[in-house]
Image 1: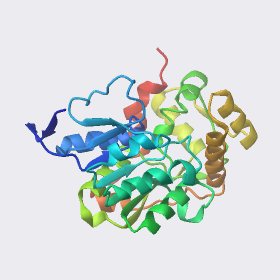
Image 2: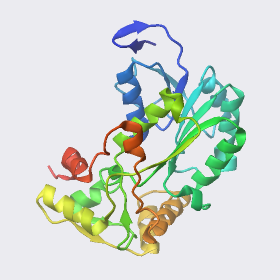
Image 3: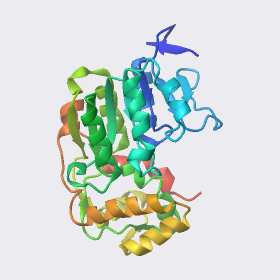
Length: 298
């Protein structure tokens, strides 16, 4: 293992564990910590996967929420944890809580948790229970209550946009204050490296709230071809999620989130990104320009 600090090899123990890699936000946290030269450990679910490009720069260890034997080795020596709930795990007490208790028992002092916007008023989603467990444990925390990711459009929705020029989500005309995962990652790095963010609950959104007709319009303008938004029923949406290979629990949680969004729960625009980073959030237009290639054929 080799760890870099401002360009020089040194032997420093990692006190940060990053989960949720190679997911969107986890990968941004990794990139941010590498840029700062801060040693950290990555907990990977699948060590058989191709090694990421940063494998020679960081410590990588096997970590699986459902395999207790991987918990203690991953948390050994760790003081700060970046926690991402695997989308497939909806039973918090059975699937997530044991790892959190082991983390605290091993000496983790601060948990930065990727939560969701409006979680404080939504007991249905697993994030609510996770926040509750963390807060009641007495460990220091930072809750990153993020709005819907702009990158959902460049990942899970990309093929529909690329191949059918369509966004199909059961949201109606409701607005969403989309946030770029690059901003979430930047805020997470601040929280992991600066104690002023301990015991804070941040609502992370972009600069504006957009409905999906407006989103389709922005994609149309920048991609130079018509993109339209359809509004399927929740049942049709769940059916297509299952046909795409997702588990029922995942499909129900995602459908629930979009249903709540339909009632206006994701339209709030917060200034927390500006306050933490000292700059405005990345705009939706900038996101589309940066990711335009993923929606192009050929």
